[in-house]
Amino acid sequence: MNLHCLSKILCVLTVAAPLGSFIGNRLSHRAAVMMGGILSSAGLVLSSFATSLEFLYLSLGILTGLFT
Image (cartoon, rainbow, N blue to C red; front, side, top):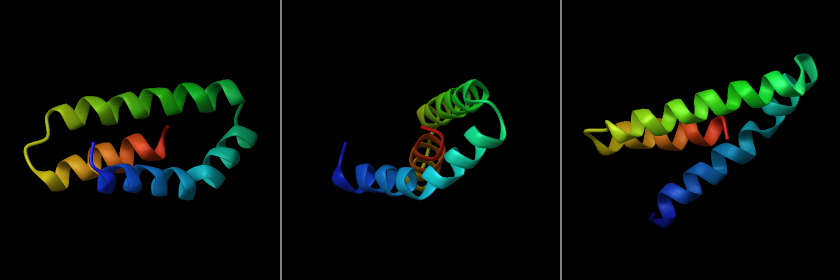
């Protein structure tokens, strides 16, 4: 994994932390973890079908980074 992809995932993780806190407080913590796991897995599965670098950045960087 190159540093650009890793830095995008870490950036999205840092920016999404308040969103995860809000969802955890609004819903139960169990629901927030289940939702994050399902959406993060969907990002990994979608990235396996990537045909372009832009789609890979979107699926792996945004979906997986946002819901991890």
